[in-house]
Image (cartoon, rainbow, N blue to C red; front, top):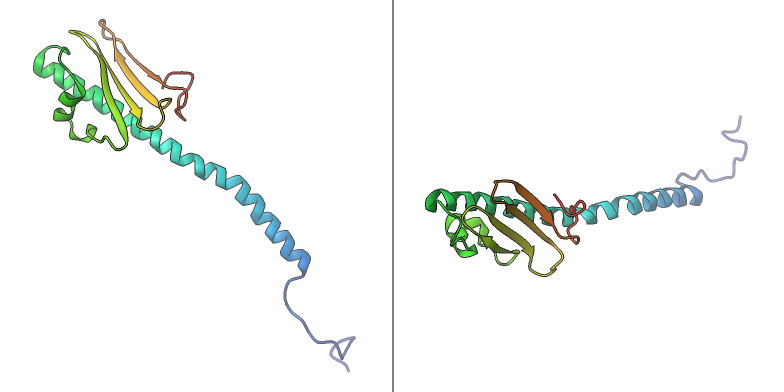
Length: 144
């Protein structure tokens, strides 16, 4: 009794060309979906760093007020003395555009792109607002 219907045929194992092409096509589709989302994560991480620096600057301003009982005289260099992590000129720029007796504004901006910035403003009545530049990835309509 013969082992197969074609006794002279050589037994071959492996994948057909169609199977290989289907697998390559599926890998390509998955890569097309995944790669853009991975590339977007770097921008989100940078924005998180700026937001964190702005919040740290806000805390340093409150510390400055506790020490001096006024925001007058608060500058970026004064905040550097209170919080060493703010002194990172290679990654962001910290400025204090407004520092009056009862209000202030701190701004953290990207060194290379002027559209990426985050601002925390304290009004004389104590209300705090957060605004951001339109170039920032997580800027939602100008606020954050």
